[in-house]
Amino acid sequence: MFNNYENIKIEYSIEDNIKDGKEYYMIGIYDNSNNQNSIIQWLYIEPEEFTIYEYDLPNDKLIKFE
Image (cartoon, rainbow, N blue to C red; front, side):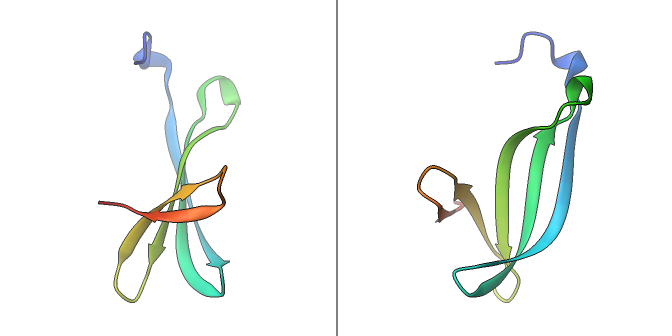
């Protein structure tokens, strides 16, 4: 998948977010190689039941992570 993985710099951010009227923790996972952020995945965590969802950007919806 990655030909030169030594140069990949994976980082993340954690934020609070509201989606469809519900509160989530949102984790952005990105590659910060060459000082340019490239989003790899957004994860949403529902804090009450600790359910994890991945964000489907083209369809603007959450998909339960299994």
